[in-house]
Image (cartoon, rainbow, N blue to C red; front, side, top):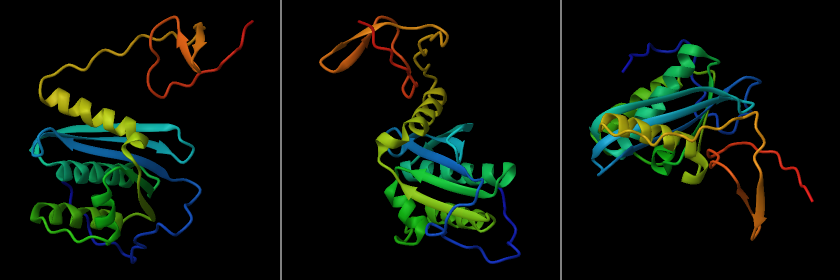
Amino acid sequence: MPTFSRPRTPALFPLTSSPPPDDYLIAHIDGGARGNPGPAGYGVAITNQLGQRVAGLSEYLGHQTNNYAEYSGLLAALQYALKHGPKALKIVSDSELMVKQIRGEYKVKNLVLQELHAKAKQAIAHLEWFSIGHVLREGNQEADRLANEAMDKGMGRRAAPSPTIDHAKEYEGVVRDGVIKLDGPALPEGARVQIRIRK
């Protein structure tokens, strides 16, 4: 974990009520531990303010807790923003506990988490703008996928291969009970599609 020097100007923290600048990063973060504690990892899906993918980060953390993994994902996102810029970051996490701890609404009682929390606050102080918010697990699927990939890799498991999709090809299907059934491979989660109705 890197050490951060003291910022020259006071940090505006948290900036959840301030409007975002023109350019900022959005980091969806997730961390998990199978067994809690158990084999742990984090995933971070970073986009720009327009929703365009910028980076995907993940790491296997060994035998840790869920909360340790969540904080590790937060620190990875903060380090990325400080290194690559812009130094404006919006964090989206499905860990309500961590979000409220970073906002100062909950106290951090665990000694290990206190250290990670302090490092996160120190890194946040070097940003020009920062926001953090909670989202339900369903709204954090890419970060969840990256975290699970990290855990699988660390445990020596192979992830199931993704179906090969020809993006230039048109796939046909039929509507049954209001759901489109494709005559072809299953499309990956989040794939954008265009529908053309034929008689």
